[in-house]
Length: 318
Ligand SMILES: [Fe+2]
Image 1 (cartoon, rainbow, N blue to C red):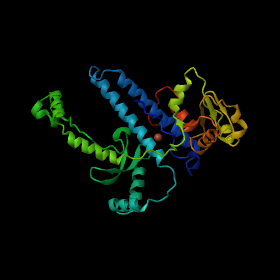
Image 2: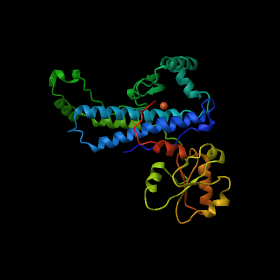
Image 3: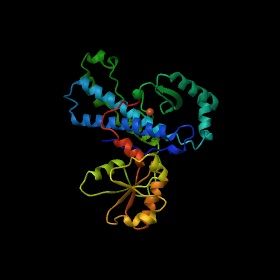
Image 4: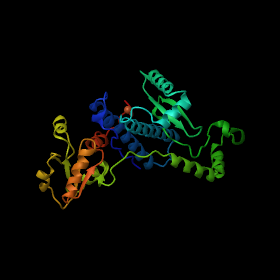
């Protein structure tokens, strides 16, 4: 199953100290590249028979899939915690940081020290919660695949030799078969229920307003039916970056009544802005109020570029 690109959760034009072009390039090229790599790897994995494929090839593909998946998750979490809307931890978080690190300030120093130690070699730094021992940790991942943040183990199989060699010798297959018969699914189900309870909420979206993903729109565009696409980015955005979606026509988002009569009311109208926030949603809403079947394009032009910029497999994290 393909991973769909997530519309950028932060507003790239509203982040002090991090320029918009830096955030957008990171989102479109690096995050978009990780999504593309993950989807290519998943296509490859479903196209082969994993039992008859050489083990080394399966291991390499699964390693790369894990690495791509971790890069995707880490980037989505990264962009999601960049809103800058709340500068300090709330009371509950501050209490937890004080409990696990001594004080908020000590946590901050440790986090900064950890980040400093990674400078020059790259990697990720995270504040993570381990449901296993109910503790907060500052952790690093020098490789994307060291951990998928928030992963809660549901079923664990130890395949180190120490787990089976004494009884099964080199016959790991027999050990695995025995293990499969011995799984306590009550425990697995209980763990699964707890893990679901910990699932983080997805980024907020205006679910009341009909919308379409860039992947769904791309599929429509290769069909025979012409698709009405309106580029509703503010004028200064278009003059800065004239590149747009295929067959899109630019219309001023501030003068909907001047141009909406040129649209066909017999077909859906897909509206986008730069990132899929207020502007595109606002124009789609106005068009709907005037009787058009208008839908905004989730994530806007940045999501389109992130999903479609290149067909080649880029490095996961430059
Ligand atoms: Fe990155």
